[in-house]
Every structure is written in structure tokens, then in C-alpha cells.
Picture 1: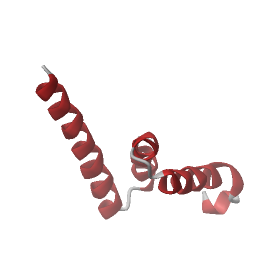
Picture 2 (picture 1 turned 90 degrees about the horizontal axis):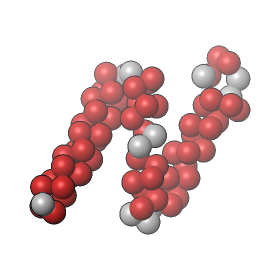
Picture 3 (picture 1 turned 45 degrees about the vertical axis):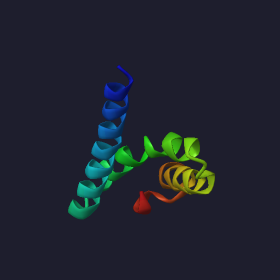
Length: 71
């Protein structure tokens, strides 16, 4: 039913947050990059376009713009 589906979605968002928080606290940069990606459409859907744009620009810069020593 609808309540069950909403509970699953909410739990998925909580898990994404928990995983991101854990990765940041442990200093696991690769996991942080992986965990940030699902937040972009979530932020866009909630109207936080500037936050989504900054995260996307950060990921693009890290992978394609910054020199090899900063990647």
C-alpha cells in the first residue's frame, strides 16, 4: 500500500544520509563521491537547484578539471 511505499522511500533516504555521514567521518573519499551522486536528483526534486549544481560541478571538477595530484 501507499504507506509502506513511502516508508521504504524514507528509509532509503535515511540510509543514504547515514552512509554519507559514515564515509565522511571515516575519511573514505571514494565512498563520499559514490554517496554524493544520488543526492543530486533528490536535491533537484526538492527545489535545491543551487546545491545540486555545486555538487555536480565539484564532481566534474574532481574527475575532469583538476590536475592528477588533486584527483
